[in-house]
Amino acid sequence: MMEKAGYLQQTRSQAFDNEGQVHDIVELHILGNRYAIRKSDLMKALSGRMYVQVEEVTRNWNDYLGLTRGLAHVSVSGKALNIDLFGAGNFTLSLSMLRAVIYGKERSVGIVRIPETPAVRIRRAAEGQQTISAVV
Image 1 (cartoon, rainbow, N blue to C red):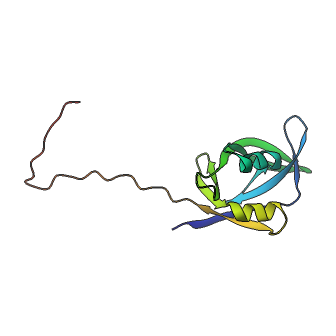
Image 2 (spheres, rainbow, N blue to C red):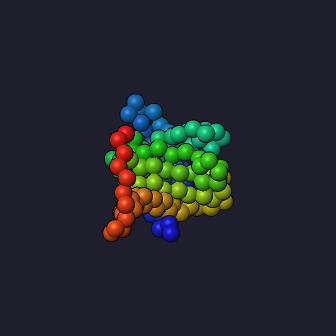
Image 3 (tube, rainbow, N blue to C red):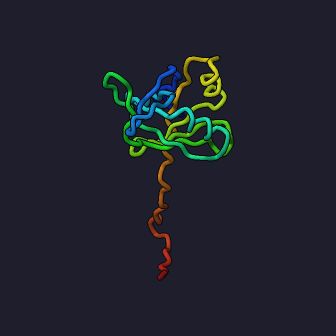
């Protein structure tokens, strides 16, 4: 079962990059942290199969884009935007709801954590069961 981890919203925000250029952004709030995707990059990702950067946002009178904290891309099915935050896990959100947010029909879209797949269990030999050794 997927658990809610945050939300994405378009706030008409802008943030400066490290070269002083201003970018329109969409904000992601995941597990209490604030991130951003540059809107121009997000539009490219929605139109094709490309990865975009998820950057941290810091506030000091204005918003500033910081280090890349993950990558986002459209799912193979074309129905979701998948987000991989380095060291924090994988998350997803509905592409149709994301488009509604971008075009002003909705205020935000929920982000859910993709559960990690459990490791494959190695079956142990039962007592009395014969085992075969192999050299690989």
